[in-house]
Length: 447
Image (cartoon, rainbow, N blue to C red; front, side, top):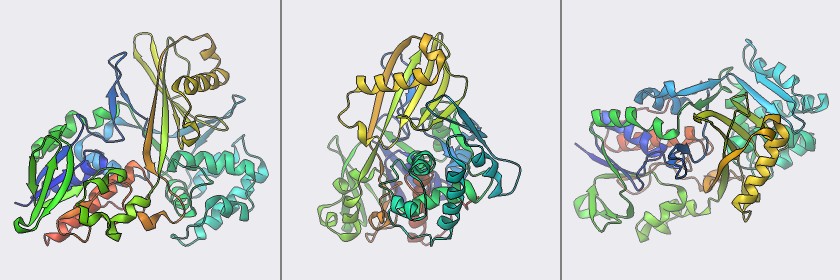
């Protein structure tokens, strides 16, 4: 039985392990922390003992591989589809974005037409630009803002439509991204299938998605799970036809195949010195990160009736209503994607700005007491989808026998999302299967 060691217990690593374990491999999954999920994970809030997500993660109907993984391990029921999205402007007005029972791409036409924060001219211009965008070759990737201006988009449409959607989806601003992944978001998420745009929000902390059911599944397939085990270096043992993993406790483990499923900013540090300068791997060093900040707020009463709100012309992009998590404690999480402008701003000031924003938006907040707050910033949350970024994204199969890569930064055809992470894990597993002469298709078809 071939031994495969997956280094990293984020979604990419979990997907690779889940894909290979039922196919005759002895799988070991190593995670440096005492929890699974990687950047899409939870932690215990020291002040309350509650398990909370570092940042709220959601999927969409078009995320077929992420949902396939959830189905496999039995946690799909923990995702709640949001068939209506609520868009709110600083004046308190709300537009509801819901699909009509018409075939794509007509299903969202009436919702766009009813958006109160866009003028009639903006909406006509957006329709024109969407049609032109979808007609572009899939790999065309000029700077997006310049492309939008060439296609007659007003600054208001760029800020209130393109920017609102893409900053959340790509964790990057319109002035920094390229056309390719903007097109991907709109084509796959809004135009291709009527169910693709439906947002799915976990009903439990992310830790529970990787909890009893997942661990039980791994136990049934004899996956060896090693938590709090950090790999500091991987070296190739040619005479043994395998790899030696050097752990932070000074010990080593050997394996025939190793899948490095760690964030892109850690990959080069794990590689043997002779591979770091190799052009195949060196390209990873050209990827740049984009941060996400989440502001967690606990109020002494209910302050929001809606399950979520997408904010327009605000500092925050999403407000998630997590409900009453303890007697007399009502929990909101506000997500600030592409949070580069907050660099150097103190947590107290970030909290003050978000609380002021919510106070202006929701009258109930004015009478409520903030019980406590927490600000979490993931500085390397995703790679930045700059124009031409695919030149820096390596495939999962490397030129080195027995070495594979997984992670949302690898060449998946998707931006940095949970879907991209799972796809990368499945693609890495496909590469392992090809190497042992048992090719199989694991990546799930699109909607």
